Amino acid sequence: MDWSDGVRSLRRGLGIASRVAIARLQEETPKCSRAGLSARGRFAVLPEFGPNPGRLQLRVYVPPVPVRSGAPLITLLHGCGQDAASFATETGWTALADRLGLPLVLPEQQALNNQARCFHWFHPSDTERGHGEAGSIAAMISTAAAHFGSDPRRIFVAGLSAGGAMAAALLAAYPDLFAAGAVCAGLPVGSACSAIQALARMAHGTPECDTDEWIARVRQIAPRGYSGVWPRLSVWHGDADETVVADNGRKLAAQWRALNDLPEAPFHESGSHQSWGDAVELWMLPDLGHAWPVGPGGGLPGHFTAQAPVAAVREIARFWGIA
Image (cartoon, rainbow, N blue to C red; front, top):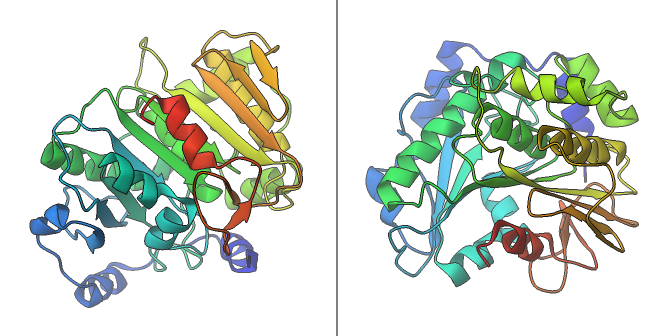
C-alpha cells in the first residue's frame, strides 16, 4: 500500500482547509436525507448529524435485514488513503453486519482536512472530548444510536492505523459511551502530540513509561474524575509492520492493562494471542505487515488487508460478545 502520501501530508503539518473550501466540498457532496439511515443493504451519506467540529463526513451501512431495536452499534475508522466503504467491506465488517443485522457508523476523513485522509489521532484538539474529530464522531454515534434504538451498553469502535489510534483515543475520551473497542496497527493514547512526534512513534515505537504515566495519558483526555469501568480492548498488530512498528501494539496493551490494574503476565496465552480475562487481549501476528488481518471466517485480501491465520473481525466480535 502507498503510505507515502500520508507521511508527506504529516510533514506538511496536516493543515486544515479554509471555510470557503469546506463550503465548496459540501456543495459537491451528494445530499442524503435522514432516510439514508433506513436504506437497506447499501452505503449512504448522511450530511447532517449534529455538531461537526472536526468537519468529517458520515457514511452509514444498513444491513439488508431490518435492524432490531436494542441491537449493537459498530463504528469503524479507516486508515490513511482509504475510504470508509471499502474499509468496511474488505475487512469483513459488512459481512458481519449482514449476518447479525447490525448497522455500521463510518466516519470518513476529508481531503481538505488531511490530504491523505488520515484521522488526526495525535492532535490534542481532535481527541479532546466534545472537540474536533472526536466530537464529530461522538455526534455521529449519538444520531445513529437514537435512530436505530441501539443498546447503549453495546456500542463499539474499531480502526486501522491512524483510524486505530483514533479509536484508542475515543475509548479514552468517551469511556462512558463505548463498551469495547479494537485497534489494529495503532498506537497508545497520548503517544504523540505533533506531526513530528507521530512520525517518530510510528517508525520507532513509544518510549517506555511507568504504570502511572500510562494511566495519566489516558486520563488527560478522559472525563474529569471518571471512576467508571474502562471499555474492553482488543489489540492487533503484525510483527512485520514497518509503517507502525509492533512495539506500539504492545505498548497500547500495556497501557490498557495499567488502566485496569492488571499484571504484565497474561492470564492466558496461546501462540500469537494473549489475554487478560475479558478486559484486554493482544494479537501479535507473525509475518503480518501494515494491514488488517483477514482469513478463514471473514474479509478479502486487498490493498489494506492481508491474509492471516485468523480473521480479525470474527475474533473481535467474539471478544466483544456479539458473535
